Amino acid sequence: MQTVNQLNTLRDQVSALRADGPVALVPTMGALHEGHLTLVKTALQHAAHVVVSIFVNPIQFGPNEDLDRYPRQLAQDAALLTEAGASLLWAPSVETMYPAGFATNIGVTGISDTLCGASRPGHFDGVCTVVAKLFNQVRPDLAFFGEKDWQQLTIIRQMARDLDFTQPAAVAIHGVPTVREPDGLALSSRNAYLTLEQRSQAVSLPNAMRSAIAALRCGVPVATAMHQLQAEILASGFSSVDYAELVSADSLTAINTLSDAPARLIVAARIGATRLIDNMEV
Ligand code: AMP
Image 1 (cartoon, helix red, strand yellow):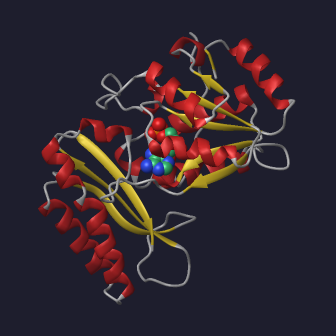
Image 2 (cartoon, protein in one colour):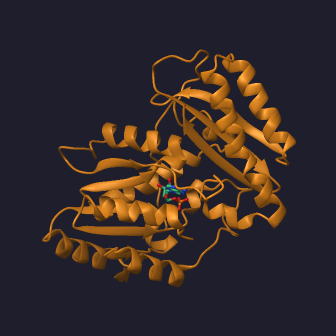
Image 3 (spheres, helix red, strand yellow):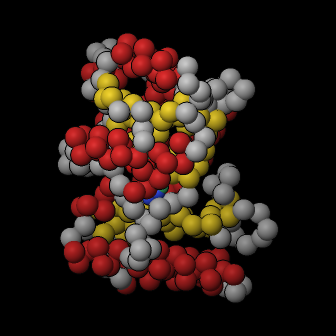
């Protein structure tokens, strides 16, 4: 696997790969774990070659967020990607992605303003802008994103439709189910911030979510179940809950009564200085 950090080299290399068949893109911010590697392995089932990008995208971080301390370990990541079967690692610098004078913003209105968008203003514009750039740089046939970031996946699907990135032109967007630790905690690069004590408390998040889903399925009213869920998360050591909501899986609008329509339980909560997110099918 080759690591590339110049745009013209990337384009040459991807053109060569495309001669063998479809090319898939897996965008990441690095500090790779089994969740990312599962995206790569799933992509390899659909494409001849997988290009992985690693770029800690400054414009998707708010002023008081963890941009500076976000884990960076390119050499280790490259070794993991080689083992997973990726063909190319695209690791541009901030200057390559955002040269002086860069002035464009891409945003999806509505669904970017709720849930994580409410507590992280501008976050999804940063995500959309970098993903649109990555799509244009790599011009993949397919792209793979984790269901772990359900709101992000929904927004990217919308952006890809709205800006004609999707079939038949290009870039079919695939969602990949969340990969979890054996105890149920969703894998995340941010889990590395947790102390041992916080790590053992953090498992209460998926546990409480599963209990809430069981309660909803038994007919407990949505408002009651969401209240219980928040209380359980807070009682287990989390300092705050940004949101804990039952939403429509497609539109992300809040649901007050369970029906046959696809629904998702979606939560963001803080433990110490670390913000964890999770979501599950209901
Ligand atoms: P990140 O590096 O956190 O920006 O994530 C890069 C991609 O990996 C995104 O599409 C995430 O949704 C996906 N991802 C992160 N964690 C997981 C996980 N535990 N399971 C599946 N996909 C994941």
